[in-house]
Length: 281
Image 1 (cartoon, one colour):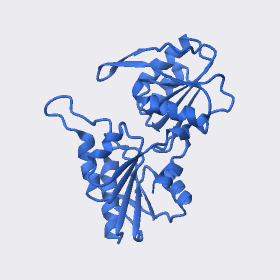
Image 2 (cartoon, rainbow, N blue to C red):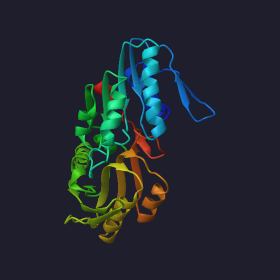
Image 3 (cartoon, rainbow, N blue to C red):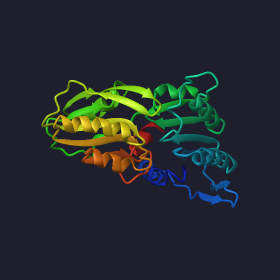
């Protein structure tokens, strides 16, 4: 049975249809003091909990869903974390700082037999779990909503760390070239973007990344492309977090379209990762 978290109901429903599994009618309740409680009906022998941890509250809810599934009689629990919050905090830079990705992975491990997470910041995050954990690579699905007639398309990642994502989208699209920007982080919220040598004039460019949060760094990349007279610019990301006025920031920078998956359910979630998850289950 597919057990949905409150932030992943659309994806859970799509996954249930994709796998021909029943979808649990989970009840979510919040007490006056702010605490939450979930109720999971009998999930059968195998419960597949699907819950993106987009907030701290969602992290707590995920732990409750796992525990409730066990209490309801599940012999086996598989936890699918489409978007894993804190995954980018995968190392400590100074003494006394936590490795937050490890802390949340350990907590999730206590209530499950297996974990699947979609395109984490780095695959090594899965090593923090104390149960078998696997990354699911779904970036290629971002090619589906792109127009068939892109002009001499260039798939561009904001830095060399995301080049594999851009390559996956290009390969799924079937044609085009791949390049990246060089990005130097000057501080926690200040990044310097140096354009590559790619010729973008008159070409359609798809900028591909794993996650877009505030859109500020991506906006700087877009400005460079506009200065270089790109014909059209779209942004494709696996995890469309898009906090605050991120969507406005991208529009003002000159983005023609933003495409995301349903790991985080947003208006730009044009494609589902459910088939990729189904293949891994």
